[in-house]
Image (cartoon, rainbow, N blue to C red; front, side, top):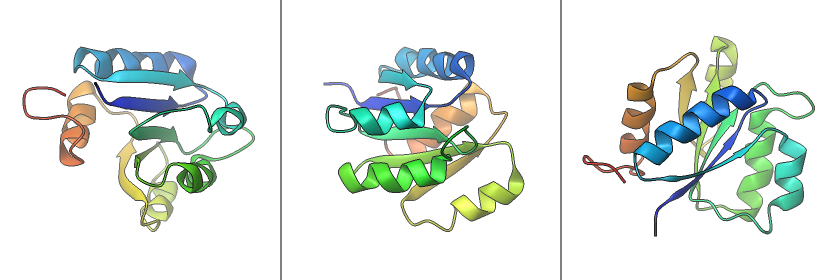
Length: 124
């Protein structure tokens, strides 16, 4: 069974592009653009990792991570942000395995997933 990655970003186009990259690596991707909808569905969601945008309307990615981790504590959490200050704040949370600085390319995404053992050297 392939690993499932939850991608939550209010920029749906970016999230779908990330999903395509993950699927090319043999991972399954689930894209959502509303953090509240994620929480409404959290009991039914199955995921091994989550890529969460830090800045979203209504709820930031750090708060979403904290709430998701209550339900899925063993998942790998990676935050994405274009803001250096938020990057430093996010790194203070022990559940955050990595913070990706936006913009980033496919090579950085895959290298990050390798670093956190979600993708092997030859793919998932």
